[in-house]
Length: 100
Image (cartoon, rainbow, N blue to C red):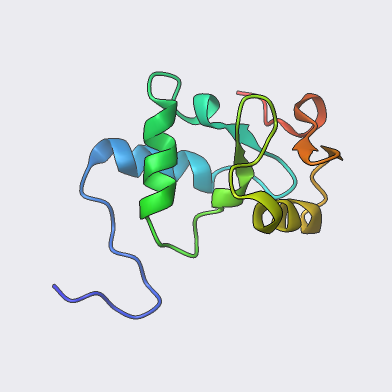
């Protein structure tokens, strides 16, 4: 089935679908770490976010466990626009981390 412009195809893997659902559920102004999203496989979260090209997935709300951001200035800019609390170039996880 051809891909429709502007719409992402739904993931076929249930684990990928679950990861994307969890990331989409992070509200504006909050973040989660890769380990918060998928404790057993945080690297899988990074892989999914790096390979899924869906504008509806707020990838920028997922950060490293120390609050640093893997996508640098581009990600920091998006987080600043959402008023996510930062300490320098890291997210202040004490304030911005979404409770489980």
